[in-house]
Image (cartoon, rainbow, N blue to C red; front, side, top):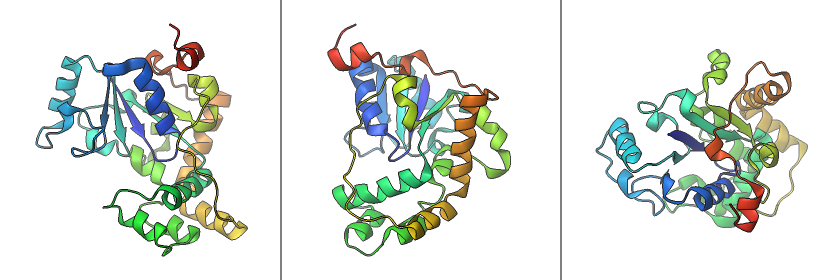
Length: 231
Protein backbone atom coordinates (compact mmCIF):
# COMPACT_ATOMS: atom_id res chain seq x y z
CA UNK A 1 0.00 0.00 0.00
CA UNK A 2 1.12 3.55 -0.75
CA UNK A 3 0.34 6.70 1.21
CA UNK A 4 -0.46 9.66 -1.03
CA UNK A 5 -0.15 12.96 0.83
CA UNK A 6 -2.45 15.58 -0.69
CA UNK A 7 -0.86 19.00 -0.20
CA UNK A 8 -3.38 21.81 -0.86
CA UNK A 9 -3.31 23.37 -4.34
CA UNK A 10 -0.90 20.91 -5.93
CA UNK A 11 -3.39 19.31 -8.39
CA UNK A 12 -4.54 16.93 -5.65
CA UNK A 13 -8.25 17.23 -6.46
CA UNK A 14 -7.64 16.40 -10.12
CA UNK A 15 -5.49 13.43 -9.22
CA UNK A 16 -8.00 12.23 -6.64
CA UNK A 17 -10.76 12.09 -9.23
CA UNK A 18 -8.64 10.28 -11.82
CA UNK A 19 -7.38 7.72 -9.31
CA UNK A 20 -10.91 7.10 -8.08
CA UNK A 21 -12.05 6.45 -11.65
CA UNK A 22 -9.25 3.97 -12.12
CA UNK A 23 -9.00 2.24 -8.73
CA UNK A 24 -12.62 2.49 -7.61
CA UNK A 25 -12.84 0.65 -4.23
CA UNK A 26 -9.07 0.07 -4.09
CA UNK A 27 -8.41 3.64 -2.93
CA UNK A 28 -9.34 5.03 0.50
CA UNK A 29 -9.47 8.66 1.60
CA UNK A 30 -8.67 10.21 4.95
CA UNK A 31 -9.92 13.78 5.33
CA UNK A 32 -10.65 13.42 9.02
CA UNK A 33 -13.17 11.15 10.82
CA UNK A 34 -16.18 13.40 10.14
CA UNK A 35 -15.53 14.21 6.48
CA UNK A 36 -17.88 12.67 3.94
CA UNK A 37 -15.00 11.47 1.75
CA UNK A 38 -13.25 9.60 4.56
CA UNK A 39 -13.37 5.82 4.19
CA UNK A 40 -15.73 4.05 6.58
CA UNK A 41 -12.84 2.05 8.06
CA UNK A 42 -11.11 5.29 9.09
CA UNK A 43 -13.92 6.87 11.06
CA UNK A 44 -12.88 5.47 14.43
CA UNK A 45 -10.30 7.94 15.81
CA UNK A 46 -9.43 5.62 18.71
CA UNK A 47 -7.70 3.07 16.46
CA UNK A 48 -3.93 3.27 16.09
CA UNK A 49 -2.62 4.03 12.58
CA UNK A 50 -1.06 0.56 12.36
CA UNK A 51 -4.43 -1.05 13.08
CA UNK A 52 -6.18 1.18 10.57
CA UNK A 53 -3.66 0.25 7.90
CA UNK A 54 -4.17 -3.45 8.61
CA UNK A 55 -7.93 -3.04 8.20
CA UNK A 56 -7.47 -1.25 4.89
CA UNK A 57 -5.08 -3.88 3.59
CA UNK A 58 -7.62 -6.51 4.55
CA UNK A 59 -10.01 -4.78 2.12
CA UNK A 60 -7.35 -4.75 -0.64
CA UNK A 61 -6.82 -0.99 -0.56
CA UNK A 62 -3.81 -0.04 -2.70
CA UNK A 63 -3.59 3.71 -2.02
CA UNK A 64 -4.45 5.60 1.14
CA UNK A 65 -4.99 9.20 0.09
CA UNK A 66 -4.62 11.58 3.02
CA UNK A 67 -5.19 15.29 3.23
CA UNK A 68 -2.25 17.40 4.35
CA UNK A 69 -0.19 15.48 6.92
CA UNK A 70 2.15 12.52 6.76
CA UNK A 71 2.72 12.94 10.52
CA UNK A 72 -0.67 11.41 11.34
CA UNK A 73 0.35 8.18 9.59
CA UNK A 74 4.09 8.07 10.24
CA UNK A 75 3.71 5.14 12.66
CA UNK A 76 2.12 3.03 9.91
CA UNK A 77 4.08 4.04 6.79
CA UNK A 78 7.76 4.47 6.00
CA UNK A 79 8.88 7.42 3.83
CA UNK A 80 9.56 4.90 1.04
CA UNK A 81 5.80 4.29 0.85
CA UNK A 82 4.94 7.99 0.63
CA UNK A 83 4.05 9.77 -2.61
CA UNK A 84 3.32 13.48 -2.98
CA UNK A 85 3.05 16.19 -5.60
CA UNK A 86 4.92 19.45 -5.02
CA UNK A 87 4.22 22.82 -6.62
CA UNK A 88 6.33 25.95 -6.92
CA UNK A 89 5.70 27.62 -3.54
CA UNK A 90 4.88 31.04 -4.98
CA UNK A 91 2.26 29.59 -7.34
CA UNK A 92 0.91 27.34 -4.60
CA UNK A 93 0.49 30.16 -2.07
CA UNK A 94 -1.24 32.46 -4.57
CA UNK A 95 -3.53 29.64 -5.66
CA UNK A 96 -4.40 28.79 -2.05
CA UNK A 97 -5.29 32.40 -1.31
CA UNK A 98 -7.42 32.57 -4.46
CA UNK A 99 -9.12 29.30 -3.51
CA UNK A 100 -10.24 30.76 -0.21
CA UNK A 101 -11.46 33.93 -1.91
CA UNK A 102 -13.43 31.92 -4.46
CA UNK A 103 -14.71 28.97 -2.47
CA UNK A 104 -14.27 29.86 1.19
CA UNK A 105 -13.47 26.84 3.30
CA UNK A 106 -14.61 24.60 6.09
CA UNK A 107 -16.73 26.59 8.58
CA UNK A 108 -14.22 25.67 11.26
CA UNK A 109 -11.29 26.98 9.20
CA UNK A 110 -10.54 30.32 10.81
CA UNK A 111 -7.91 31.18 8.20
CA UNK A 112 -10.39 30.73 5.35
CA UNK A 113 -12.93 32.85 7.20
CA UNK A 114 -10.41 35.66 7.67
CA UNK A 115 -9.51 35.65 3.96
CA UNK A 116 -13.12 35.69 2.77
CA UNK A 117 -13.92 38.46 5.27
CA UNK A 118 -11.14 40.60 3.78
CA UNK A 119 -9.08 40.61 6.96
CA UNK A 120 -5.90 39.31 5.26
CA UNK A 121 -4.21 40.45 2.09
CA UNK A 122 -1.92 38.10 0.18
CA UNK A 123 1.23 39.13 2.06
CA UNK A 124 -0.42 38.72 5.44
CA UNK A 125 -1.74 35.34 4.33
CA UNK A 126 1.74 34.20 3.27
CA UNK A 127 3.21 35.13 6.66
CA UNK A 128 0.70 33.05 8.66
CA UNK A 129 2.52 30.22 10.45
CA UNK A 130 0.22 27.64 8.91
CA UNK A 131 1.19 28.76 5.41
CA UNK A 132 4.95 29.07 5.84
CA UNK A 133 6.78 26.17 4.17
CA UNK A 134 3.50 24.26 4.07
CA UNK A 135 4.82 21.54 1.78
CA UNK A 136 7.79 20.72 3.99
CA UNK A 137 5.54 20.54 7.04
CA UNK A 138 3.01 18.31 5.31
CA UNK A 139 5.76 15.82 4.52
CA UNK A 140 7.73 16.19 7.74
CA UNK A 141 10.87 17.37 5.91
CA UNK A 142 13.65 18.70 8.12
CA UNK A 143 15.77 21.55 6.75
CA UNK A 144 18.85 19.97 8.28
CA UNK A 145 18.31 16.62 6.56
CA UNK A 146 17.40 17.41 2.98
CA UNK A 147 19.25 14.33 1.77
CA UNK A 148 16.35 12.39 3.28
CA UNK A 149 14.27 13.46 0.30
CA UNK A 150 15.82 10.46 -1.44
CA UNK A 151 14.05 8.18 1.06
CA UNK A 152 10.55 9.09 -0.15
CA UNK A 153 8.69 6.77 -2.47
CA UNK A 154 8.08 9.42 -5.13
CA UNK A 155 8.13 13.22 -5.12
CA UNK A 156 6.52 14.66 -8.24
CA UNK A 157 6.12 18.19 -9.57
CA UNK A 158 2.69 19.52 -10.48
CA UNK A 159 3.83 21.05 -13.77
CA UNK A 160 5.09 17.69 -15.06
CA UNK A 161 2.09 15.53 -14.13
CA UNK A 162 1.13 15.16 -17.78
CA UNK A 163 4.43 13.44 -18.63
CA UNK A 164 4.84 11.55 -15.35
CA UNK A 165 1.30 10.35 -14.66
CA UNK A 166 -0.77 11.19 -17.72
CA UNK A 167 -2.80 13.83 -15.87
CA UNK A 168 -3.76 16.62 -18.26
CA UNK A 169 -6.92 18.34 -17.14
CA UNK A 170 -6.81 20.25 -13.85
CA UNK A 171 -9.85 20.64 -11.64
CA UNK A 172 -10.65 23.07 -8.81
CA UNK A 173 -8.68 25.90 -10.40
CA UNK A 174 -9.72 29.42 -9.45
CA UNK A 175 -9.62 32.45 -11.73
CA UNK A 176 -7.36 35.22 -10.43
CA UNK A 177 -9.38 38.02 -8.90
CA UNK A 178 -6.56 40.20 -7.57
CA UNK A 179 -3.26 41.70 -8.69
CA UNK A 180 0.01 40.17 -7.50
CA UNK A 181 2.78 42.71 -6.98
CA UNK A 182 6.57 42.27 -6.78
CA UNK A 183 6.31 42.98 -3.05
CA UNK A 184 3.81 40.12 -2.71
CA UNK A 185 6.20 37.73 -4.48
CA UNK A 186 9.10 38.83 -2.27
CA UNK A 187 7.04 38.16 0.86
CA UNK A 188 5.98 34.71 -0.32
CA UNK A 189 9.58 33.81 -1.19
CA UNK A 190 10.81 34.93 2.22
CA UNK A 191 8.13 32.87 3.97
CA UNK A 192 8.82 29.73 1.92
CA UNK A 193 12.57 29.43 1.58
CA UNK A 194 12.60 25.77 2.63
CA UNK A 195 9.78 24.88 0.24
CA UNK A 196 11.60 26.69 -2.57
CA UNK A 197 14.76 24.75 -1.85
CA UNK A 198 12.91 21.45 -1.76
CA UNK A 199 11.13 22.23 -5.03
CA UNK A 200 14.42 23.07 -6.72
CA UNK A 201 16.14 19.96 -5.36
CA UNK A 202 13.35 17.76 -6.71
CA UNK A 203 13.43 19.56 -10.07
CA UNK A 204 17.18 19.20 -10.39
CA UNK A 205 17.08 15.59 -9.25
CA UNK A 206 14.84 14.91 -12.22
CA UNK A 207 17.46 16.48 -14.50
CA UNK A 208 20.65 15.21 -12.93
CA UNK A 209 19.47 11.87 -11.65
CA UNK A 210 21.21 12.04 -8.27
CA UNK A 211 17.94 10.98 -6.64
CA UNK A 212 15.59 8.74 -8.57
CA UNK A 213 12.05 8.07 -7.43
CA UNK A 214 10.19 5.17 -8.96
CA UNK A 215 6.59 6.13 -9.62
CA UNK A 216 4.31 3.28 -8.52
CA UNK A 217 2.53 1.72 -11.51
CA UNK A 218 -0.79 2.05 -9.67
CA UNK A 219 -0.45 5.85 -9.92
CA UNK A 220 0.12 6.03 -13.65
CA UNK A 221 -2.94 7.17 -15.56
CA UNK A 222 -3.23 5.96 -19.14
CA UNK A 223 -4.60 8.81 -21.29
CA UNK A 224 -6.94 6.33 -22.99
CA UNK A 225 -8.29 5.11 -19.67
CA UNK A 226 -8.55 8.63 -18.29
CA UNK A 227 -10.26 10.38 -21.16
CA UNK A 228 -12.08 7.70 -23.12
CA UNK A 229 -12.83 5.02 -20.55
CA UNK A 230 -10.93 2.32 -22.46
CA UNK A 231 -8.85 -0.43 -20.87
